[in-house]
Image 1 (spheres, helix red, strand yellow):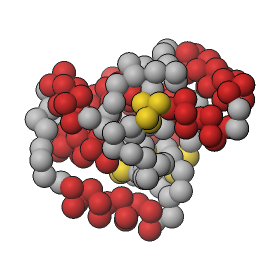
Image 2 (cartoon, rainbow, N blue to C red):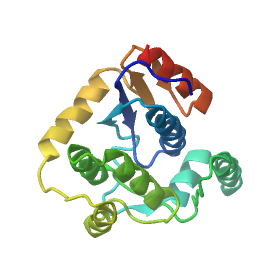
Image 3 (cartoon, rainbow, N blue to C red):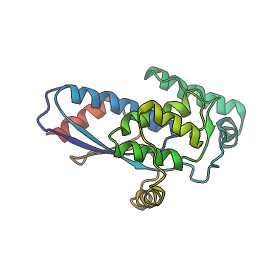
Image 4 (cartoon, rainbow, N blue to C red):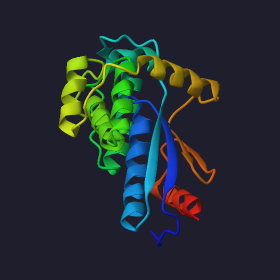
Length: 208
């Protein structure tokens, strides 16, 4: 990446923590953000919450059951997940859809918000994604989230529920219907799991 001319690039990221496209897109974004920082720039990441499945149960159920209902057959579900796992593998991600627990992400978003306030939002987001899509952990379980927070060095908070509900409503009201969405300070908006080269160009445009 070329030398940067601005001290900071602000990027708002709308994502859901059980969304594989959010995980892949965030992974690619982080690699480019790391190179931007290594070149002397700064990146201010702001997370905005979104729930792909707001009615998902807090206790969770096997993602395979959800996929069976969505795709209509076990064969179609297997083809789709194998294809996505292959995409993730190219980005160095191990995606274990067969182990994933489909769950409501409200509490995971609340932990991410707490981590962001402590300056640890990015590593916390990565760890929650990996817990869900690689480790097969129930990221709606408070004990699981507390353990993940400890790994990253985040102090969980019992506060923030009302603020999170308000932010979820605000994001929906803004017109977002799918994630991820990356909005750069310079006005560039990227949707979906874009290639690293696309993120690089967005960083350069935002850095001026």
